[in-house]
Image (tube, rainbow, N blue to C red):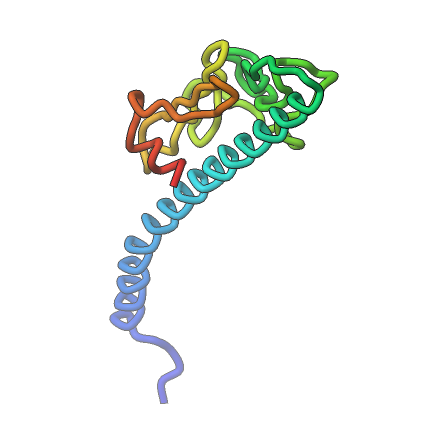
Amino acid sequence: MRKAFTMIELVFVIAVIGILATIAVPKFSATRDDAMATKAKTTVANIRTAMSSEVQRKILKADYTPINNLGGIINSYDQPIFDYFDGNTSGNRVLEYAPRSCKNSSATGCWMRTGANSYLYKMPAGIGGDVKFNVSNNRFDCDTTYNPHGCRKLER
């Protein structure tokens, strides 16, 4: 009886494991990118719900001023974003646990405030392209002229 594997058997097993790894690794990275896009999609839905609630609160108080921004510092890194409506830190929060903006200029899968009423989601590399959102008329709308494919990805 044999008590060990032959060299050919070991090489064959290693080759099979290598082939399986080359197939599995790209699938796992794609899954991670899809998870980040799903998280962004959920954030968009939560922001829209929060804005709707805030508009209703304002109407009940006979305050008809529109929401102009959702917080965050323009072009800043690793700072809270989507924290307070119109920067009013004594008012209602947009998201209870506000995410942080991108850690640096090359980060992906994160949000940045790029203007007075505009926000950018930097899509993961596997999906590609940035997606721009604007706050106007008490709405958080995707700018379809900027990246229509990205808008479809985050809104459906």
